[in-house]
Length: 252
Length: 252
Image (cartoon, rainbow over all chains, first blue to last red):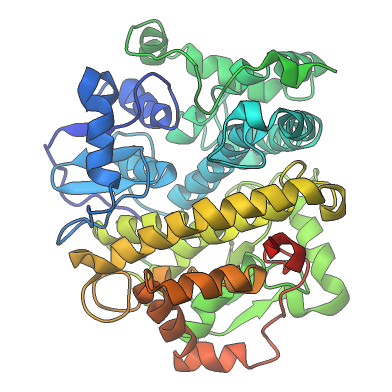
């Protein structure tokens, strides 16, 4: 699958919320690892939020070739406008050398990415917004505490075990990577959970049950381009986004 | 993107939970619309659950070419084993004539499908399991009531409005379909929400704000193959799966 027949020379433009890594971070990590230049509207100051609203407002119904956008992150590449995080990653990865350009392996990488986004991103967000996506955390704290306990006790070990199963499996190949013995975009799919649940992650790390997962996690942070990015001012700090550190959610 | 170079003659096998439509239903609808034969382990009686466990148990780490599986639905096609609903659909649709075989349009369809699955499947499931995915609904009824109200008042109109925006946009083309003036697999991505929230859906229908969405929804049910399927004993009834009808969640 996925042969990019014509490699476009158009610049890559990421449209995302300012001030948080958020789901835009998965897209940034691909660009940074690949060493490809991109513009990031999150860094455009007062223009950042209006840039998003221009795409998501009710009057924007797309155009002759693009469907409208539900929510950021949004990728603009030439005339093409795409949204939905795993979809943007699937489009970019073969173009940036982080996935094969054809064949069934891309579906396997997509399978990994969808699962990582569920476990370490979507379900983390649910821990602080369990009863109403649109309401404040402060209005659902007791429920958030229950959801966080369920996440840490049941869901997090389940997802970590799955990633460890991938790494233990033959298809992962040699080295710390998830598939085929080399770095792919799937390897860039875990971040933020340690910020949100540092005690739980420390406990999981110490358990020795998920050594491969933590080796992968550290190996990604040691990639030269990623390391330089994480130390740069292009990297936003975790704040009131998906990965929030509420210490009370980890208290017994 | 996505040129299936070699069309395999291998049979299609769906591995999914028995007794509910669930996420397996999205896969079944593609097979049924395309008129392609498939086996469905959900219909295999006592063998149904063990078939799933064979893939998802901790000892199964995949094989030389397949990564392990986190959760069903699972597609087996020849030697290839895939999971994650939108990933299976992305693999199948070009092969079954329900998506283009190459080009950027497949990313647009994937974008639609991911959003439909979020709004009309994942978020519906959250309404009856807001504080603990692994606990019973009966242990989280007050929270479910709040989440259901948030879903019906805020999220459901937001997702319906988005689908209507797609239909109002130029890229949807003529007719009731979401993209390019013809039926694609993206059109098969809404079902079950009316079963779970009949009063809310009736209210949205009567509002006249989402006429295109309901025309699409009815047009899909009138497709000859889909219609025959829905009337057949291959179709499971909604039960304790994703789309549950708890009348108390719709009471004021």
